[in-house]
Structure formats: C-alpha cells, structure tokens
Image (tube, rainbow, N blue to C red; front, side):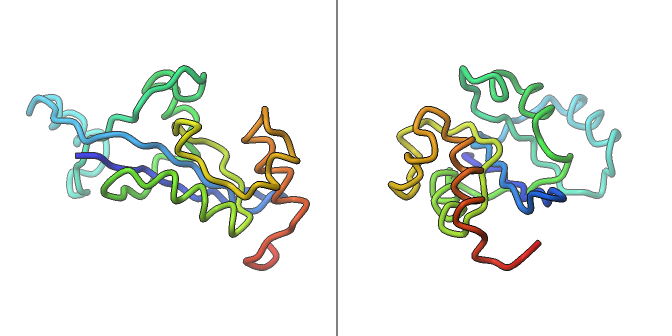
Length: 138
C-alpha cells in the first residue's frame, strides 16, 4: 500500500521544519516481524514502511532515510501526498528539510525561484525566513 511518512520537527532558533518520505508498506517474514516488534513496544501498531529511494544522498538507502529523520516517530498517511504537503508547507512558510519526491511532484510559489532555483531546499529556508511565518512566532 502506498504511504507518506511525515514529521514536523521544531528546531530552536529556526522553528518548524517538515520531513516527507513517500514509500510503501512491506511484508516481513513472521520471525523478522516479531524480532522487530521486540525491539520497541509490541503493543504499538506494526506497519513496516519502505521509503522510495532516489539518487540524492539522504534518500539513497533506507539507512540514509532513517539517519536523516528527526526522530524515530512519524505520522503515516495513506497514499502518496508528499507533493501536496510541500505546497501546504510553502503556503504556511515552513521549510521542508527532507523529502524523497521527484521535481515534477513539487509545486511551490513562483517567487521561490528567486531564492535559489538550483537549491530548492535552501530556497525553502531563505524564502521562509524572508517572508516570515504565517503561524505565529516560535
């Protein structure tokens, strides 16, 4: 099943920063699933997620995605909705610090290009800093 994994990190001095990873559920062998459940709390819901990999360093392997993630907690949304979340984040002026989306999935306001068309992640931070938050002071 397609899923989107999302996390909103609150970073002191920066404010909120969004992380997005699209991927799919994965079926594990029962013994492996039980071993993984024993490493956490077996009463938690168990959904095994595999992110879509890209040629960008932070999403080049499952390990790199986990290493880049702000914490071991997230929200999983059914379907692939990462592109819509990037658009919403730009409207709310929340930078996206990590995503594994293809460029054609991204829709930000046209003015974002003025902040660095060749560096979309950096442009997010620069545009959000220049325009200021819509959600109040952190």
